[in-house]
Length: 74
Figure 1 (cartoon, rainbow, N blue to C red):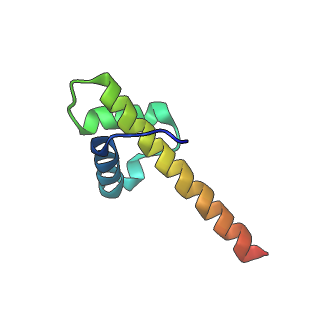
Figure 2 (cartoon, helix red, strand yellow):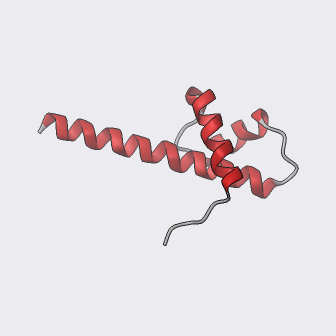
């Protein structure tokens, strides 16, 4: 079973990724710094959960795009 994330983390991460897609990469540390600049949360744990979910989404999209390109070339 995968990780269970609260709705707040998912909603915030998707909204940030939709609003600022060019700022995020597949690197957690980079995303953590970007999230801390964009939103003001008192909790480091919440910031890290949001950055981790954004990293997961970016890596998943990159993997999907790579698979589609491979299928198109085959």
